[in-house]
Length: 527
Image 1 (cartoon, rainbow, N blue to C red):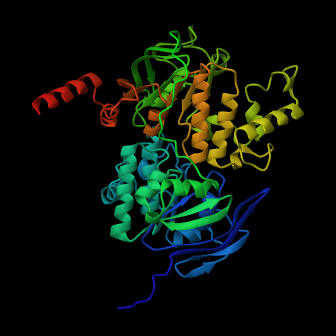
Image 2: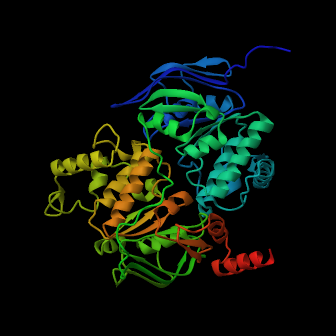
Image 3: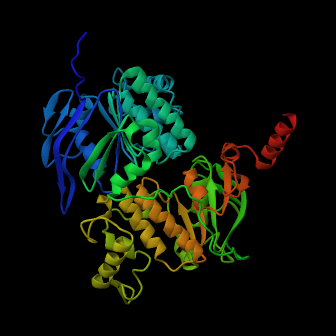
């Protein structure tokens, strides 16, 4: 038997990556072992995704070398990385929306029957992967019709189809429910245990680091703050390493009410019915109110009408039936701009698609909606650069938007900093109603706590807030009332201060609260 020590499967040696005005990675050296789950954590802009993009061949390092399976490279191309068995699932998916699941999975490696595309074989390959890895997806369904969680499964299966031995997952649970996260972790444990794969997870969720990883590396401002056996650290230690100071982890604490809820509703939804992109009913007869000085949280597995609800309330989707009122004004046929003028701001769930103008700079994105007002505009036509840049610098400092300057193109920012641009813009409007969807998706622990505090401050100032989140901890912490939804219907209403998670979870999966309560009582009686 050989006593040779196990060699790393991946080694980064003195890696630096310089972008214009930003040193994303600064002399990083670390090793990743075969058959382990390695977590890479750090605040937004710490250089986590950049380092993994270097491994996957997207970025070319300014200095240093990468060693994969014993062979050293100054840089890799994506084709080389894939040939070495490296696969990466990005935070923003790279799928063709109009293609089916099966077509996306075999894209670039399409099976042929003679000179023709063998769609039946593509479906067979997909079904085999689904059976092998337990990641259920419908092979014939167009990707554009899938929930975000199912789209992520397609990305993972696509990577596994290409024979990945080293799997990089960038914020894999940011779009998943707790149940889907558990399922993903079961898959990760299985492929590591049964196939000896190496999995690298980029994440902000420290509880998940503790649950799934063998070792964890911490990046801070582009430099390596340390690599630890997960068993030897806790969440507080990791948080402190990430931000460079002791951190009080208050992210699971309940919010404290500072004033009573006034009687008048700011947002009223009455018997609302909305169709999805396929023409099917996604919202079915919903009715609820959101009062000034109140946060109403919407809890549900993604794809149960939450997106369509938000789009209907903000004027981005047509209302099939029912009514929506903002401060007493019926908004059924109003444009998003006219609804905004009534006093409603909106933080959308997809920051890249609808939250920012990616090719515009930070200044332009922060003044959108105010760009025709003084002091940013002359005669509502010409934008005054000086006042706009001063305003952008003020908001950038206030919301800690990290960039090379307010002239930086927003599309070049990290996901968390892009989200800060959206939140800074929408929270800066003097509005008394906010619709917020997935505010902390893909955002680090420091920014999450910052956003949560800003949301609570808005509520305490009398703002009415409709909050949609796939993060149940977030809803428990922030909500004054919580509504569960399933297949477009409200299945329960809860006080987060007292609501059992098991009951909330059952209602999220389709159980009716009234029926569920009767079942619980009957079970207790039988006992």
